[in-house]
Length: 430
Image (cartoon, rainbow, N blue to C red; front, top):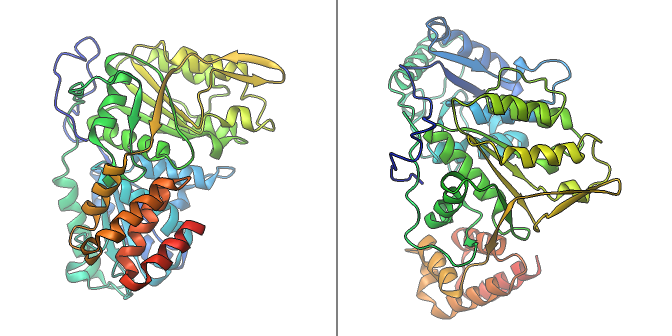
Protein backbone atom coordinates (compact mmCIF):
# COMPACT_ATOMS: atom_id res chain seq x y z
CA UNK A 1 0.00 0.00 0.00
CA UNK A 2 -0.04 2.94 -0.41
CA UNK A 3 20.36 19.53 3.63
CA UNK A 4 21.24 19.38 6.72
CA UNK A 5 22.21 22.86 7.87
CA UNK A 6 24.71 24.22 10.35
CA UNK A 7 23.30 25.28 13.67
CA UNK A 8 22.56 28.89 14.46
CA UNK A 9 21.95 28.79 18.20
CA UNK A 10 20.39 32.19 18.73
CA UNK A 11 17.68 32.30 16.07
CA UNK A 12 14.96 30.48 18.04
CA UNK A 13 15.81 31.76 21.51
CA UNK A 14 12.42 33.44 21.81
CA UNK A 15 10.57 30.45 20.40
CA UNK A 16 12.43 27.27 21.38
CA UNK A 17 11.37 24.13 19.53
CA UNK A 18 10.01 21.07 21.26
CA UNK A 19 12.71 18.61 22.26
CA UNK A 20 12.31 14.87 22.47
CA UNK A 21 11.98 13.88 26.10
CA UNK A 22 13.13 10.29 26.03
CA UNK A 23 11.88 8.03 23.27
CA UNK A 24 8.43 8.70 21.93
CA UNK A 25 6.21 6.04 20.42
CA UNK A 26 7.20 5.47 16.80
CA UNK A 27 4.69 5.31 13.97
CA UNK A 28 5.06 2.17 11.84
CA UNK A 29 3.37 2.08 8.42
CA UNK A 30 2.85 -1.33 6.79
CA UNK A 31 2.83 -1.27 2.99
CA UNK A 32 1.46 -4.45 1.43
CA UNK A 33 -0.67 -5.93 -1.34
CA UNK A 34 -4.16 -7.07 -0.34
CA UNK A 35 -3.29 -10.44 -1.85
CA UNK A 36 -0.82 -10.76 1.05
CA UNK A 37 -3.23 -9.69 3.79
CA UNK A 38 -2.65 -12.84 5.84
CA UNK A 39 1.09 -12.05 5.95
CA UNK A 40 0.35 -8.47 7.06
CA UNK A 41 -1.90 -9.74 9.86
CA UNK A 42 0.72 -12.23 11.03
CA UNK A 43 3.43 -9.57 11.03
CA UNK A 44 1.24 -7.23 13.08
CA UNK A 45 0.69 -9.98 15.66
CA UNK A 46 4.43 -10.60 15.95
CA UNK A 47 4.91 -6.91 16.76
CA UNK A 48 2.52 -7.20 19.73
CA UNK A 49 5.17 -6.82 22.44
CA UNK A 50 6.55 -3.65 20.85
CA UNK A 51 3.00 -2.25 20.81
CA UNK A 52 2.21 -3.36 24.38
CA UNK A 53 5.37 -1.64 25.62
CA UNK A 54 4.25 1.59 23.89
CA UNK A 55 7.31 1.67 21.66
CA UNK A 56 5.39 1.63 18.39
CA UNK A 57 1.94 2.12 16.89
CA UNK A 58 1.25 0.31 13.62
CA UNK A 59 -1.00 1.49 10.80
CA UNK A 60 -2.23 -0.07 7.57
CA UNK A 61 -5.09 0.68 5.22
CA UNK A 62 -7.52 -1.57 7.10
CA UNK A 63 -7.62 1.17 9.75
CA UNK A 64 -9.42 3.49 7.32
CA UNK A 65 -12.77 4.75 8.60
CA UNK A 66 -16.01 4.86 6.60
CA UNK A 67 -16.27 7.97 4.38
CA UNK A 68 -12.53 8.68 4.60
CA UNK A 69 -10.69 9.49 1.37
CA UNK A 70 -8.35 6.49 1.36
CA UNK A 71 -5.73 8.07 -0.93
CA UNK A 72 -5.46 11.22 1.20
CA UNK A 73 -5.35 9.26 4.46
CA UNK A 74 -2.72 6.79 3.25
CA UNK A 75 -0.45 9.63 2.11
CA UNK A 76 -1.00 11.50 5.38
CA UNK A 77 -0.07 8.38 7.40
CA UNK A 78 2.99 7.78 5.22
CA UNK A 79 4.11 11.37 5.81
CA UNK A 80 3.91 10.81 9.59
CA UNK A 81 5.58 7.39 9.65
CA UNK A 82 8.93 6.87 11.37
CA UNK A 83 9.35 3.32 10.05
CA UNK A 84 7.86 2.00 6.79
CA UNK A 85 7.70 -1.78 6.39
CA UNK A 86 7.45 -3.11 2.82
CA UNK A 87 5.95 -6.62 2.51
CA UNK A 88 7.77 -7.63 -0.66
CA UNK A 89 6.17 -10.16 -3.00
CA UNK A 90 5.33 -10.41 -6.68
CA UNK A 91 1.90 -8.94 -5.91
CA UNK A 92 3.53 -6.03 -4.05
CA UNK A 93 5.76 -5.24 -7.05
CA UNK A 94 2.83 -5.58 -9.48
CA UNK A 95 0.65 -3.03 -7.66
CA UNK A 96 0.63 0.26 -9.58
CA UNK A 97 -0.54 2.23 -6.53
CA UNK A 98 2.22 0.83 -4.34
CA UNK A 99 4.88 1.45 -6.98
CA UNK A 100 3.78 4.94 -8.06
CA UNK A 101 2.50 6.38 -4.78
CA UNK A 102 3.58 4.50 -1.66
CA UNK A 103 7.03 3.28 -2.67
CA UNK A 104 8.12 6.56 -4.27
CA UNK A 105 6.89 8.52 -1.23
CA UNK A 106 8.56 6.10 1.19
CA UNK A 107 11.86 6.19 -0.74
CA UNK A 108 11.89 10.01 -0.76
CA UNK A 109 11.37 10.13 3.03
CA UNK A 110 14.00 7.43 3.60
CA UNK A 111 16.55 9.27 1.43
CA UNK A 112 15.86 12.49 3.34
CA UNK A 113 16.41 10.74 6.68
CA UNK A 114 12.84 11.46 7.76
CA UNK A 115 11.87 7.77 7.99
CA UNK A 116 13.41 4.28 7.86
CA UNK A 117 12.24 2.00 5.04
CA UNK A 118 12.65 -1.74 5.67
CA UNK A 119 11.88 -4.45 3.09
CA UNK A 120 10.32 -7.60 4.56
CA UNK A 121 10.70 -10.43 2.07
CA UNK A 122 7.57 -12.56 2.37
CA UNK A 123 7.50 -14.36 -1.00
CA UNK A 124 10.16 -15.24 -3.55
CA UNK A 125 10.19 -12.74 -6.43
CA UNK A 126 12.59 -10.85 -8.69
CA UNK A 127 13.09 -7.57 -6.79
CA UNK A 128 16.50 -6.71 -8.32
CA UNK A 129 16.63 -3.02 -9.28
CA UNK A 130 13.75 -2.04 -6.97
CA UNK A 131 14.09 1.26 -5.02
CA UNK A 132 14.71 -0.73 -1.83
CA UNK A 133 17.25 -3.08 -3.45
CA UNK A 134 20.28 -1.58 -1.68
CA UNK A 135 18.70 -1.68 1.79
CA UNK A 136 19.25 -4.32 4.45
CA UNK A 137 16.01 -6.25 4.78
CA UNK A 138 14.50 -9.02 6.87
CA UNK A 139 14.83 -11.98 7.23
CA UNK A 140 18.62 -12.28 6.82
CA UNK A 141 19.98 -12.83 3.32
CA UNK A 142 16.61 -11.80 1.86
CA UNK A 143 15.34 -15.33 2.52
CA UNK A 144 11.56 -15.08 1.98
CA UNK A 145 9.20 -16.08 4.78
CA UNK A 146 7.01 -18.00 2.30
CA UNK A 147 4.31 -19.09 4.77
CA UNK A 148 2.36 -17.41 7.55
CA UNK A 149 3.21 -20.37 9.80
CA UNK A 150 6.98 -19.76 9.60
CA UNK A 151 7.31 -18.54 13.20
CA UNK A 152 11.12 -18.72 13.16
CA UNK A 153 11.27 -16.21 10.30
CA UNK A 154 8.59 -13.96 11.84
CA UNK A 155 10.46 -13.96 15.17
CA UNK A 156 13.67 -12.95 13.39
CA UNK A 157 11.74 -10.14 11.67
CA UNK A 158 10.19 -8.94 14.93
CA UNK A 159 13.58 -8.93 16.68
CA UNK A 160 15.11 -7.02 13.77
CA UNK A 161 12.40 -4.38 14.00
CA UNK A 162 12.91 -4.22 17.77
CA UNK A 163 16.63 -3.49 17.23
CA UNK A 164 15.71 -0.72 14.80
CA UNK A 165 13.23 0.78 17.27
CA UNK A 166 15.63 0.54 20.22
CA UNK A 167 18.39 2.23 18.21
CA UNK A 168 16.18 4.85 16.61
CA UNK A 169 17.69 8.32 16.99
CA UNK A 170 15.23 11.09 16.11
CA UNK A 171 16.41 14.69 15.67
CA UNK A 172 16.69 16.41 19.04
CA UNK A 173 16.08 19.96 17.94
CA UNK A 174 15.69 22.22 14.98
CA UNK A 175 18.89 23.88 13.81
CA UNK A 176 18.59 27.00 11.72
CA UNK A 177 20.44 27.24 8.43
CA UNK A 178 23.34 29.62 8.26
CA UNK A 179 22.36 32.32 5.76
CA UNK A 180 23.95 31.66 2.37
CA UNK A 181 27.40 33.10 1.71
CA UNK A 182 26.03 35.17 -1.15
CA UNK A 183 22.98 37.40 -1.04
CA UNK A 184 21.31 37.49 -4.47
CA UNK A 185 20.40 40.90 -5.79
CA UNK A 186 17.13 39.46 -7.07
CA UNK A 187 14.84 36.85 -5.56
CA UNK A 188 15.61 34.36 -8.30
CA UNK A 189 16.71 30.95 -7.10
CA UNK A 190 17.77 27.82 -8.91
CA UNK A 191 16.71 24.24 -8.35
CA UNK A 192 16.20 20.83 -9.89
CA UNK A 193 13.06 18.68 -9.61
CA UNK A 194 14.98 15.62 -8.45
CA UNK A 195 16.40 15.37 -4.96
CA UNK A 196 19.92 14.37 -5.97
CA UNK A 197 20.11 17.44 -8.21
CA UNK A 198 18.88 20.00 -5.69
CA UNK A 199 21.43 22.78 -5.25
CA UNK A 200 22.09 23.25 -1.51
CA UNK A 201 22.14 27.05 -1.78
CA UNK A 202 18.59 26.95 -3.12
CA UNK A 203 17.12 25.43 0.01
CA UNK A 204 19.21 27.70 2.21
CA UNK A 205 17.90 30.78 0.43
CA UNK A 206 14.27 29.65 0.73
CA UNK A 207 14.52 28.74 4.41
CA UNK A 208 16.40 31.95 5.08
CA UNK A 209 13.45 33.88 3.68
CA UNK A 210 10.90 31.80 5.60
CA UNK A 211 12.49 31.34 9.00
CA UNK A 212 15.06 34.11 9.47
CA UNK A 213 13.43 37.03 7.72
CA UNK A 214 9.94 35.81 8.54
CA UNK A 215 8.73 36.12 4.96
CA UNK A 216 5.75 34.23 3.59
CA UNK A 217 6.66 33.22 0.08
CA UNK A 218 4.90 32.58 -3.23
CA UNK A 219 7.39 30.41 -5.12
CA UNK A 220 6.79 30.69 -8.87
CA UNK A 221 8.00 28.69 -11.84
CA UNK A 222 6.66 27.05 -14.97
CA UNK A 223 5.51 23.45 -15.20
CA UNK A 224 8.42 21.06 -14.64
CA UNK A 225 10.71 23.67 -13.06
CA UNK A 226 10.92 21.80 -9.75
CA UNK A 227 8.44 23.55 -7.43
CA UNK A 228 6.86 20.36 -6.11
CA UNK A 229 10.24 18.67 -5.68
CA UNK A 230 11.54 21.63 -3.69
CA UNK A 231 8.48 21.61 -1.43
CA UNK A 232 8.94 17.89 -0.76
CA UNK A 233 12.62 18.40 0.12
CA UNK A 234 11.78 21.32 2.42
CA UNK A 235 9.16 19.16 4.14
CA UNK A 236 11.56 16.29 4.70
CA UNK A 237 14.40 18.51 5.92
CA UNK A 238 12.19 20.48 8.30
CA UNK A 239 10.56 17.29 9.63
CA UNK A 240 13.97 15.77 10.25
CA UNK A 241 14.97 18.88 12.18
CA UNK A 242 11.88 18.87 14.41
CA UNK A 243 9.42 21.35 12.88
CA UNK A 244 5.75 20.53 12.50
CA UNK A 245 5.22 20.45 8.73
CA UNK A 246 2.22 20.08 6.44
CA UNK A 247 2.43 19.72 2.65
CA UNK A 248 -0.85 20.11 0.76
CA UNK A 249 -1.57 20.01 -2.96
CA UNK A 250 -4.48 22.26 -3.91
CA UNK A 251 -4.86 20.53 -7.25
CA UNK A 252 -5.39 17.26 -5.41
CA UNK A 253 -7.87 18.84 -2.99
CA UNK A 254 -9.63 21.36 -5.23
CA UNK A 255 -13.00 19.61 -4.89
CA UNK A 256 -12.39 18.17 -1.43
CA UNK A 257 -12.21 21.05 1.03
CA UNK A 258 -12.86 18.86 4.08
CA UNK A 259 -10.00 16.54 3.10
CA UNK A 260 -7.68 19.53 2.70
CA UNK A 261 -8.40 20.62 6.27
CA UNK A 262 -8.23 17.11 7.69
CA UNK A 263 -4.92 16.33 6.00
CA UNK A 264 -3.39 19.57 7.27
CA UNK A 265 -4.64 18.97 10.82
CA UNK A 266 -3.26 15.40 10.81
CA UNK A 267 0.14 16.42 9.47
CA UNK A 268 0.46 19.22 12.03
CA UNK A 269 -0.80 16.94 14.85
CA UNK A 270 -3.50 19.37 15.91
CA UNK A 271 -5.90 18.42 18.67
CA UNK A 272 -8.78 18.07 16.21
CA UNK A 273 -9.11 16.97 12.59
CA UNK A 274 -12.70 18.04 11.89
CA UNK A 275 -12.35 21.79 11.32
CA UNK A 276 -15.15 23.27 9.23
CA UNK A 277 -13.19 26.17 7.76
CA UNK A 278 -9.57 27.06 7.09
CA UNK A 279 -9.93 30.11 9.33
CA UNK A 280 -10.84 27.81 12.26
CA UNK A 281 -7.70 25.79 11.68
CA UNK A 282 -5.66 29.00 11.40
CA UNK A 283 -7.09 30.12 14.72
CA UNK A 284 -6.00 26.82 16.28
CA UNK A 285 -2.49 27.36 14.95
CA UNK A 286 -2.41 30.89 16.40
CA UNK A 287 -2.94 29.39 19.88
CA UNK A 288 -0.24 26.74 19.54
CA UNK A 289 2.94 28.71 20.22
CA UNK A 290 5.05 25.88 21.61
CA UNK A 291 6.39 24.75 18.25
CA UNK A 292 7.20 26.34 14.94
CA UNK A 293 5.16 25.18 11.97
CA UNK A 294 5.96 25.15 8.27
CA UNK A 295 2.95 25.10 5.95
CA UNK A 296 3.62 24.22 2.30
CA UNK A 297 0.85 24.57 -0.31
CA UNK A 298 1.46 23.42 -3.88
CA UNK A 299 -0.42 24.49 -7.03
CA UNK A 300 -1.84 27.65 -5.50
CA UNK A 301 -2.94 28.81 -8.97
CA UNK A 302 -5.73 26.23 -8.66
CA UNK A 303 -7.70 28.87 -6.74
CA UNK A 304 -8.09 30.87 -9.96
CA UNK A 305 -8.07 28.08 -12.52
CA UNK A 306 -10.95 25.95 -11.24
CA UNK A 307 -14.17 27.88 -10.82
CA UNK A 308 -15.98 24.66 -9.81
CA UNK A 309 -14.13 24.53 -6.48
CA UNK A 310 -15.94 23.92 -3.26
CA UNK A 311 -17.38 27.37 -2.46
CA UNK A 312 -15.46 27.37 0.82
CA UNK A 313 -12.32 28.05 -1.22
CA UNK A 314 -13.30 31.72 -1.17
CA UNK A 315 -12.26 35.10 0.20
CA UNK A 316 -12.14 33.63 3.73
CA UNK A 317 -9.59 31.10 2.51
CA UNK A 318 -7.35 33.87 1.16
CA UNK A 319 -7.80 35.85 4.37
CA UNK A 320 -6.55 32.82 6.30
CA UNK A 321 -3.47 32.61 4.07
CA UNK A 322 -2.74 36.27 4.75
CA UNK A 323 -3.28 35.76 8.49
CA UNK A 324 -0.89 32.80 8.63
CA UNK A 325 2.01 34.93 7.44
CA UNK A 326 1.55 37.21 10.47
CA UNK A 327 1.89 34.37 13.01
CA UNK A 328 5.41 34.54 14.40
CA UNK A 329 5.68 30.77 14.87
CA UNK A 330 4.06 29.72 11.56
CA UNK A 331 5.72 30.03 8.15
CA UNK A 332 3.94 29.78 4.81
CA UNK A 333 5.33 28.77 1.41
CA UNK A 334 2.97 28.50 -1.56
CA UNK A 335 4.02 27.35 -5.03
CA UNK A 336 2.31 28.37 -8.25
CA UNK A 337 3.09 28.66 -11.96
CA UNK A 338 2.74 32.45 -11.82
CA UNK A 339 2.73 35.08 -9.08
CA UNK A 340 -0.73 35.35 -7.53
CA UNK A 341 -1.26 38.96 -6.51
CA UNK A 342 -4.98 38.32 -6.15
CA UNK A 343 -7.63 35.61 -6.38
CA UNK A 344 -11.09 36.12 -7.88
CA UNK A 345 -14.15 34.41 -6.44
CA UNK A 346 -17.48 35.07 -8.13
CA UNK A 347 -16.37 38.50 -9.29
CA UNK A 348 -14.90 39.44 -5.91
CA UNK A 349 -11.14 40.05 -5.81
CA UNK A 350 -9.12 39.10 -2.74
CA UNK A 351 -5.53 40.30 -2.45
CA UNK A 352 -2.68 37.93 -1.56
CA UNK A 353 0.28 39.47 0.25
CA UNK A 354 3.03 36.90 -0.31
CA UNK A 355 6.68 37.62 -1.07
CA UNK A 356 7.69 36.51 -4.56
CA UNK A 357 10.56 34.14 -5.38
CA UNK A 358 11.17 32.64 -8.82
CA UNK A 359 12.58 29.35 -10.04
CA UNK A 360 14.73 29.72 -13.15
CA UNK A 361 16.44 27.23 -15.50
CA UNK A 362 20.05 26.26 -15.06
CA UNK A 363 22.85 27.44 -17.31
CA UNK A 364 24.59 25.58 -20.09
CA UNK A 365 27.56 24.85 -17.81
CA UNK A 366 25.32 23.46 -15.08
CA UNK A 367 23.55 21.13 -17.50
CA UNK A 368 26.89 19.74 -18.65
CA UNK A 369 28.06 19.42 -15.05
CA UNK A 370 24.95 17.45 -14.14
CA UNK A 371 25.36 15.09 -17.09
CA UNK A 372 28.97 14.45 -16.07
CA UNK A 373 28.08 13.94 -12.40
CA UNK A 374 25.25 11.51 -13.01
CA UNK A 375 27.07 9.60 -15.79
CA UNK A 376 30.49 9.74 -14.14
CA UNK A 377 31.92 6.45 -15.47
CA UNK A 378 29.58 5.99 -18.42
CA UNK A 379 30.95 5.57 -21.98
CA UNK A 380 28.65 8.42 -23.01
CA UNK A 381 31.21 10.86 -21.57
CA UNK A 382 33.82 9.58 -24.03
CA UNK A 383 31.75 11.19 -26.81
CA UNK A 384 32.17 15.01 -26.46
CA UNK A 385 29.95 15.60 -29.48
CA UNK A 386 27.12 13.63 -27.84
CA UNK A 387 27.52 15.59 -24.61
CA UNK A 388 27.25 18.87 -26.50
CA UNK A 389 24.28 17.67 -28.54
CA UNK A 390 22.48 16.57 -25.37
CA UNK A 391 23.13 19.92 -23.71
CA UNK A 392 21.78 21.88 -26.68
CA UNK A 393 18.66 19.71 -26.94
CA UNK A 394 17.92 19.96 -23.22
CA UNK A 395 18.47 23.72 -23.09
CA UNK A 396 16.12 24.25 -26.05
CA UNK A 397 13.35 22.13 -24.56
CA UNK A 398 10.17 23.67 -23.20
CA UNK A 399 10.57 21.59 -20.03
CA UNK A 400 14.35 21.08 -19.80
CA UNK A 401 14.30 19.48 -16.33
CA UNK A 402 11.96 16.71 -17.38
CA UNK A 403 13.83 16.08 -20.62
CA UNK A 404 17.19 15.97 -18.83
CA UNK A 405 15.95 13.40 -16.31
CA UNK A 406 14.49 11.20 -19.04
CA UNK A 407 17.65 11.55 -21.15
CA UNK A 408 19.89 10.47 -18.26
CA UNK A 409 17.59 7.56 -17.47
CA UNK A 410 17.57 6.37 -21.08
CA UNK A 411 21.36 6.73 -21.45
CA UNK A 412 21.89 4.68 -18.29
CA UNK A 413 19.50 2.00 -19.51
CA UNK A 414 20.09 1.68 -23.26
CA UNK A 415 22.89 3.90 -24.56
CA UNK A 416 24.19 2.83 -27.99
CA UNK A 417 26.57 5.40 -29.56
CA UNK A 418 25.41 4.87 -33.14
CA UNK A 419 21.76 5.28 -32.11
CA UNK A 420 22.22 8.36 -29.93
CA UNK A 421 20.86 10.79 -32.53
CA UNK A 422 17.76 8.62 -32.84
CA UNK A 423 17.36 8.68 -29.06
CA UNK A 424 17.62 12.48 -29.03
CA UNK A 425 15.00 12.77 -31.75
CA UNK A 426 12.62 10.43 -29.90
CA UNK A 427 12.94 12.40 -26.69
CA UNK A 428 12.69 15.74 -28.50
CA UNK A 429 9.36 14.73 -29.99
CA UNK A 430 8.07 13.01 -26.85
